Image (cartoon, rainbow, N blue to C red; front, side, top):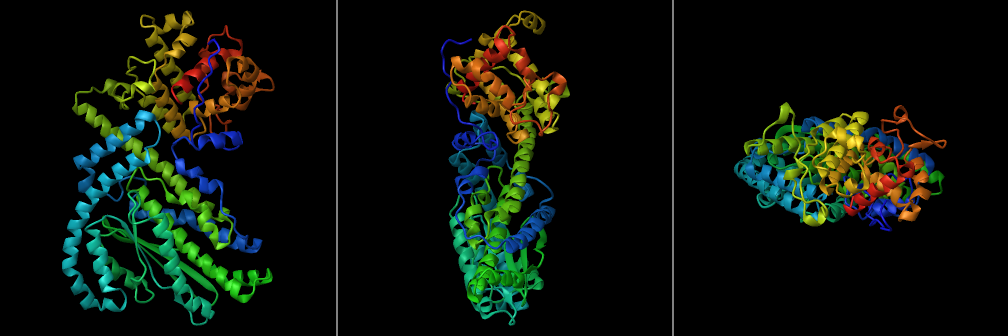
Length: 585
């Protein structure tokens, strides 16, 4: 066991489940992780809002809960499933500059096994947007030749601003961005005058302020151009078909709504240049009159009740705009992190509970995590092709993941590692992607054994096991940091941070910080991760191989390889934890 050495305190990975300890939630905020923004400060500290009556909360909850998944499914029809390049022109997908930028960005991420920094994400996005702009500028050039003819033949000047149409196209030759448009709401004359006159003013103004703040046009990551005075009047489905012909080369979102004397119908439409179809999304009718009556029953006068209804209508438009924008950029750019994660408290200004937005937050989170996995799988093939072209051989027909020897790790990140392990991780990646937790656990032990054997260069696996040298404190101290990071990242990514070395060390970190604490706190640790139940250690068949296991339950099998001379294996775990912290895991 080490002599009085205190492990450095690394930050916990994100998103580390809150139910273990509030301390973990505080520690993790400094660590960049797989879905960094999901637990942003703005979500942790939501703005105070005046709650709506429970009856209204129930109405809004049903509206949003029933639509989030259906909106996503409708959008996926035009994206042809999960892909981080769904909206790239086919010519760009094979573009050498694009492929090289992809690989370079992932290698930069692999160097620290964290998500890309804002600077690196901006750099990749700039290269991507430059390529898209080249393609789009050519497409727009052809479109500009026909725009005047289209306006004259169809008498479109009574529906859309011809000047703004030119502006959208010509500005699209200078900057690639998503265009968002909102039509004046079609409000029945039977509605209160405040809905008829104030809502058409508030809706574009508040939507413009929202998008300019959270999706600014000058952003390097998610530029959005909003044109508030594009439409002359409220629009119909036929008008949308005409508009799509004009703005076909530009990815566009169009929001519009119809309001009767008691209901609101919300509509969102999206198209992009690689698909001539328009995705049309219609939310279930929302009974605003029912909400008004509930507000009045809660002592809201007529003016305040209608104001609240107007604000809810505006907020739903903002939510749809944010959701579709995040969804679009997730399918375009693998480095993109959804803004919606940061906006839960901001969207709550509609005087409703921010919890009501959870269905949309959770849906975009699921898409975000899925996109990350799809990107890594696609990148693996690109990288394999690159190494194959350079003379790398496919061993035994197995698809190889990027070998450790090709990962660029700085000396400061691998302090005691002078040689590279050349271990391949394709099998572990496959097992984890298939949620085959048991075999992945065993594969992790096999990899750690091989790392230990490499330190004792002349030992076979059988000799190492018989001599009990495989996970001695000396061999643990020489585990290459880059290998430990790779194993950890794979477990974190495929379990959504439920399992992994980082997750385990976060638990250990709160219990033991010095050698004298090891045996005293080891029992607490193994109980927290579920390796000790009712004072008894689990047998192999009692280990839970599923996400219903306690946080940090896996990987487990490698702990059986600690020397049995140390009480309860805690000395071995202490050495392993110390190494992980030295490697900043």
